Amino acid sequence: MRKMYYIDTNIVLSYNFTTEETHLRAFNLIRKIKKSTDEFYISPLTILELYCVVSRNINKYTLPPIALILFRSDKDKVEYIIKYSIQRLNLKICQEINTNSELENLNIEIFSEYQCAIKLSPRIKLRSLDMLHIAYAFRLRKEGKIKYIVSLDKEIRERKLLIKNITDINLISRVYNP
Image 1 (cartoon, one colour):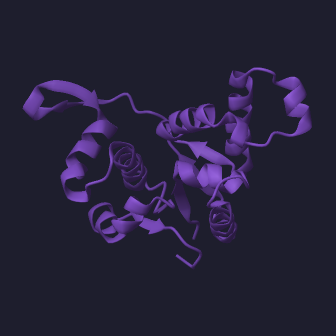
Image 2 (tube, rainbow, N blue to C red; image 1 turned 90 degrees about the vertical axis):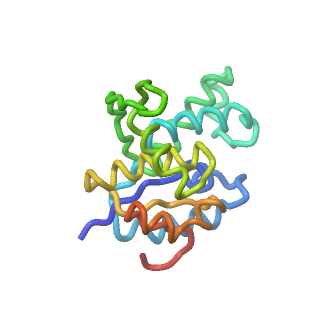
């Protein structure tokens, strides 16, 4: 049976770049997982985070000499790094679903992932971006696309059992057989 995973932003960058502090952990983790799967998912939120992190730290990421010649602007370098990172891991990007849900107590419409994050937040108690990652993963879980989330995030790791009990998503954060 094929295993499918939602990959957190920290894994995408740590796997691809030796300059990341957790590179070896992420590399070994993904290498082990790749033996049992061919599907890794990320969300549009991950793309946003990649753009923000790479833009702030552009000089941290080593580019091949040809890229330095071809891409002179930071914008071009950022786009290259993100495209490279996505392709190297063969990541699938889950599409936004333009369904709005009404937030009952404020009488407004919001995106469904936001509503899911809001509903889960009192129980899981994560920071907003982490909560949104859980919401995207939860949607993919309900669609039968993933069973696992891969993250090195400390707060997510601390809530591993809570996330599993509430969303039926298993957290993978170290090398072992899930």
